[in-house]
Image (cartoon, rainbow, N blue to C red; front, side):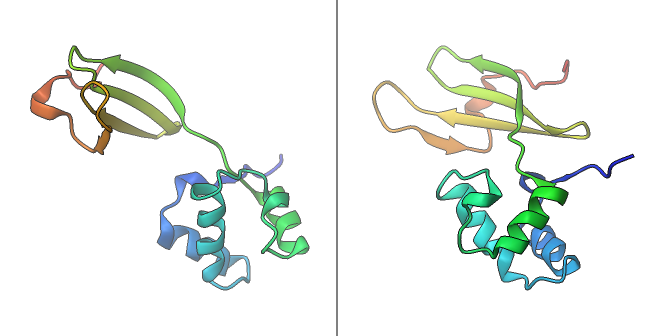
Length: 122
């Protein structure tokens, strides 16, 4: 049975650095991959050109960059939006975008004033 690929988006910085050390690489590889994912929106290891070809090939075999699945989405009357994301079968994350009208939206880890019921039914 093939080994399940590790989702690099499910790792925080320290865990990703440890992952690269386990692969015989230097911890700074985590910074390189994080920049490709979060600054450039790259999810294909072959496009990460500051990584060597052999490392890119190895990453394609043992790792993946899998985006979270949107489980639920709600919008309040003031336009605040809330999502429940599934990172993997055991991990879920709530994300809130707070904004009014045409003003720039500000991400917030918590809903304003309890406008949303918690996602307990999912």
